[in-house]
Image (cartoon, rainbow, N blue to C red; front, side, top):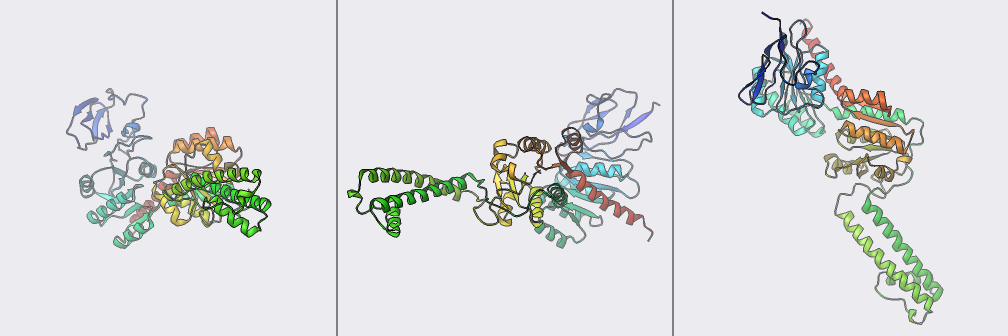
Length: 468
């Protein structure tokens, strides 16, 4: 009999691999592992030299024991189930949630520590229930960025398998408190808070000694607010100009001049005695009135625009955008919001940037008193408008690694030497960026959160192994 190597086959499509061939199979079924002779030709897409992990398949080591299987970078087909053989007596860790991202990073970390793990990603409730009740698990980890999905999977797991230790990632603190009240045994972890704390420490270290933390000045970053302020200043200048003309030409006192000028600028009534004034007065007053009419129209349009959409920055108060000495946060998602809160707690002024005005954390920023500008953080004009040459540091914390790298490149070009902190979630991108581009301080968000979860799971295993 030829030497056999075991291959895990993942099926959410209509075929599976067996002995180097594709054979039809009923859609929606999960099968594995199959046997594939080592000497036979691999299926298409699994030729020699191709990383089998990229296809959700990993061959066993020489012992023939299957280890953790997880998709490679960029692979995250909804509904995939990644299974590890040789789970031992304790039972594997079952990872539920979204495909890719933190879930994959957690599975890889568990594999490196020798902990058996299986992932059931992006499945329906019925499929998840079948997996929960049909397997011999040692623990369950719910890993997702969607709090609603995390809540659903947590309640489902606690209902079907109350005997299992349960970890869940959660952003919303209100939901966290309610979950811990309903399911006291659940352990809640906030990846956003973990990563934000690390990023805040890196920002504080990178900006140490770069200047005072005292907020000086206000920057108008909102288009409507900037137009409103400029039109308002123009109206005031038109009023003062008209008052000066009245005092000089008609010899009115200051109070009367301001009163009559206000009525003239507002087109309510003209100044008494203007008909007998000289031609130069009439000409200048007419030009000033026309300018005031234009400024009133601009002011009104800017005011309507300002009132018709969320007011994320103000002229005064906590939500006034700082003019200098601040940290520019590119990406105002869960991590960006928690990072802004942490930096504010440390006394560092911040200005957030988010391209989506309807992002959930943008709404939270108004309540928290954090100024946020709407725009693309990798756009040079936007960075200039937000005062990149006068800020203390730039933190690129969007959920897309390549966007963060693009922000770092743009910031380095506009302000050479400016401290940069980048959030990257893919270990390979982080390593390549650090090795080739040297853009600044890099935080591998997925590795940090996954490592925290792994340590918690290792504590559980140690407690299980301890004598009673």
